[in-house]
Length: 177
Image 1: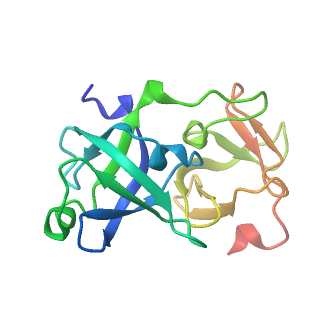
Image 2: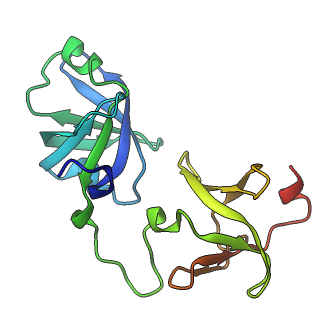
């Protein structure tokens, strides 16, 4: 399993915590168990080399923050932890949680057309997802302009994944920023 499309990035290691090898992870997943339940995870370095397997021993969310602190097997010192800063934390693509009807995985939004009406032309295509407290969709227009759209129901009321598009109802001026 070394192809990049066989992996789901669930977070990025952004720093160390303390002296015992704990790591701070900025999550890219809405499933906290990715960072709290022990089991196999994979790490991919900044160079994009093939992921390597590592065991998550335990984890917790920092109170009042979106960051998680995790312990990985074999990482028992601050210096060992520092070598992992910038690495992506991955899970196997078939490790997706089951969803309820009407729910979807955020990564499945990539490549969908963004429209202002159901039958209208595309404003652009969802090109990236940005997590940072609130999820943002990056939409790239045909002219190459990047729009950041808050992924909230009031602005993105419909996701038609099977049909390949999302509906946008942005407030006045949002698309002009």
